[in-house]
Image (cartoon, rainbow, N blue to C red; front, side, top):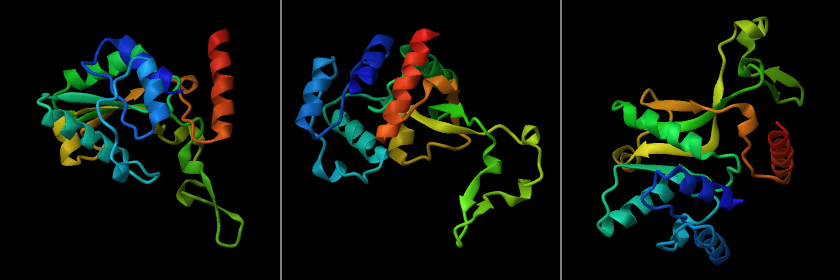
Length: 203
């Protein structure tokens, strides 16, 4: 699966280095087979299931800067983003480059249904509206919401290192259609991704 992300990054022609941060020898071998570089082994303290992505990104920045590399912009592409396209990387990077006041540009997609009408389990096991004030609001009258699609994150070096929030007034979304979005964390996610892939091939 990681091959899709590597190949999209290489095909975009945007990057001086396409690297994979990992502590797993098998993943490293696959990444190198598809053209990525493994300049370092990710430290153990950054390789558990709870390590935030920002810590991994900043470690990579600091490693390269210690080697004398000057970094101004970078892009984090998730390994579990099989639908990432070179065109999306190129277009989203242009948004960042053309807007000096913007720190981050991230891939996003709209929700298929108004999030204001979401339901949650109540303490008694029943259901309750997450936003009860919208219980009688027509869905077409609610503002469209979108979500981080978990594909890629462009950003400026200083914003990453300073710990600036990814989602703020200084961030812009790069909107994807819903057929281009499927994060993969579970076997069910994988099945959905396969179905979407077949649908895209038939389109």
